[in-house]
Length: 389
Ligand code: LMR
Image 1 (tube, helix red, strand yellow):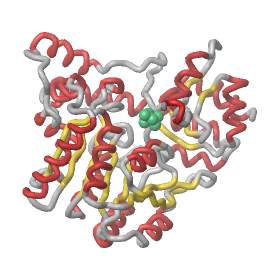
Image 2 (image 1 turned 180 degrees about the vertical axis):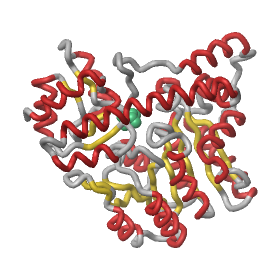
Image 3 (image 1 turned 135 degrees about the vertical axis):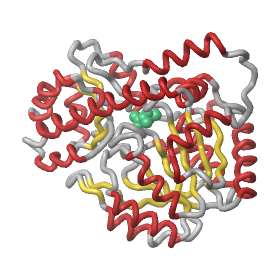
C-alpha cells in the first residue's frame, strides 16, 4: 500500500538548513530560514528565558497533562501583549497551540467548520500559508500585495481585489514584518483596509509571528489592533518562536474575537475539539516560560530590552545592506524602509544558485533573504558578491 504514495518534495526552506550545514566552506553565509542570529552567528537563548527555565526546574510541581486548551494564564498574558486594549472587554476565545503554524492550522480548521469556503492570501506570502489552508480544505483566492521589481506595496490593487471577495470569505493578514517581503502597510492603509474588511463582511485572520522585530512591540501590533476595533469577528494566530527565541519549543496561541460571550464560548469548545482530534494537547515548556516572563516585571523588562537590541541589530544591518545593494539595484533603497528579518531581492533563481555555488551564500529560490543571518562585519564582503553577479 505504501508504494501507492507519491513522493513529496522537501520543503525548500527547510531543505536549505541541511544544504547549509553540509557546506564545509569557512565563509559561508546563511540567509535562509527565518531565525535571529547575533554578531557571532549564534541564535541565543534570551537571558529571561534561561532565568524562567531555572525557576521552572525549581518550582514546577508536576508534568501531568495541561489539557487541549493549554495554560489559560499563558493564553491571557500573550493576548494582552498582542492585542492590548483592543482585546480587553471583547468576548475572546484563546487556546495555546504548537507554535504559530499550529495556531494558523487551528484557525484554518475552525474556518472550515464554520462553513467558510475561501481565504484570500496576498502574493507573495509565506509558502506554508497556502499549504495549511489547502490541508484544511479551504479554497484559496489571491490578491496582489508586493511587487518585487519595484519593491512597492500594491495597496490599491489589493483593495480592488478584496472588493471582489464574497461576504463570509476569510482574509489572511500579516500583523508586521511581512514574510517574505518586509514591505508593510502604512497606518492609513491599515485604517482603509480595516474599513474595507468590515464593509465587505470578511473575516480577518491575522498572523502575528514577528511582534517586536519591526518598529517595536506595541507599534508592531498597531495594525492588528485597528482591525480588531473595526470588525465584529476576527481570528489571530500568535507565534512566540522569534520574539521569545523559542523556535523548537513550539509555542503559540490562537484567538477568536467574537460578537458575544456565547459565540466565544462556542468557538472555545471547537478549538478544543479540533486540538484534541489533532495533537490532543500542546507542549507545555515554551508556554510556561513565556507565562513566567510576562508575569514578572523584572523578567519582562529584561526580555523587552534584549528583544529591542535584536530589533536594532537587524534594522542597522538592513540599512547597511540597502545602501550597498542599491549601488547596483537602485530600487533596493526601499529595503531600508522595510521591516523585520526579510526582504525579497529582484534576482533570478539562476543568480540565487550562483551565489550558493560560487560563494556559499544561501537563500531560497525566491531570493528572500533573512537579514538577521548577517554579521555587521561581513556585510560589505557579501554586498561585493551580490554586485559581482
Ligand atoms: C521562515 O519563514 O523562515 C520561518 O517562518 C520558518 C518556517 O517555518 O518557515
